[in-house]
View 1 (cartoon, rainbow, N blue to C red):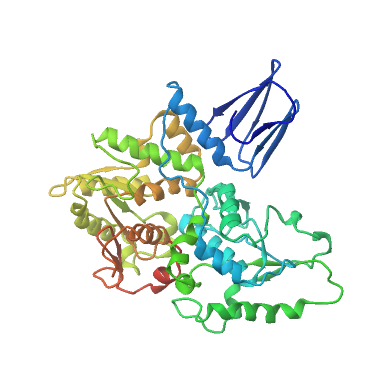
View 2 (view 1 turned 120 degrees about the horizontal axis):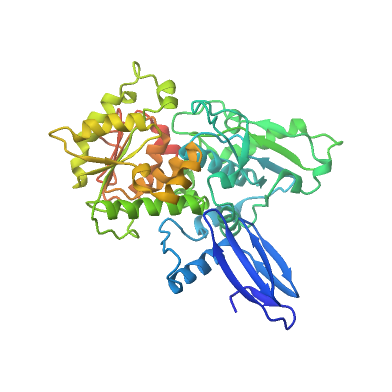
Length: 468
């Protein structure tokens, strides 16, 4: 009998796990009757003829699927190399244990927008500020990009965390790494919500008079500044919790203020949702098959395999950083510097991350022209059949997550200095690098695994305030 399946009485039953693209389905058969329950759940409790199913983590189902994959040759085998268990960090736990907690204060985090680099950092900052204040937290939401105009990212239309991330992993990681932090699934779940004060908006950094590019000068002082600010809203009439609607915090919290171990582990409370991870794995597998490469996908970096180039010339980037004023926004600049770097990967294959296939076509022409002679490919080239259809059904930012994961394993990587997407990839890859003085040039970030192009120390906020 599988772990966590506990019959209350003697009741014969059988179970099987059915895999689909977006959900896991548990199917139970008892006395000829079939019952199914499926989806992404924080907790599943289903009673079937005196049999209680208690699955506290979706990872149990994932493990069960993998067992079936090995046993049943009829199911496709995909090793999810981007999967990892919930974070259990002693460095985070020690900070949480030292915090004085106040469950009468609850933070919401509903203003995070942009691509995965923006979203990760904004959401992680929400959690860090909640820890600083000793406040409870409602599971963060994500602001959707305008699907007909990708440059419009502040739409005010929100969706839940699972749009990009694995919500159960987030909940489990908080439970393990910061047990005192109370997490609510929705604002309506807040204890004594009916007596709560009307939500109060706060941009966290607005409490600090001057913030240099490297972030809050004294992050430990923020808690006192917060509670001093909060006193003005305290009245005898308010008997319920104080709900604080946090504004978007992006590149202003100094991530190393709690030590390197905290900084390097904290980002792992967020994990990309499973279907996007699997598409990234299939992209890498197809790359290996297409170009006759022997890959060990479990390696952090795949040597001598492919060069990863982030071509940041899409509409939203061009409008945000106009090419006439920003030399590294120009297609011609990016094409030239990327092709100059490409030989470092010891491969003739360039994998391009871009949301504009017309720009990719221009780069392909440059890359194939002598003396370059590189082959350019994308996720749209490598995924086939149902996998490609699944990719095309995804929204723009969800599709970009596939590139984000693939780029983490590139033999060499290049991006430009005003892109959080590129910085996030390079900083995560830097953990595996041997060259540690990565901010001393010749580029904005330079090590043997990645280059971020721009003026050295031109954007100190990325290295100082972007969680890897």
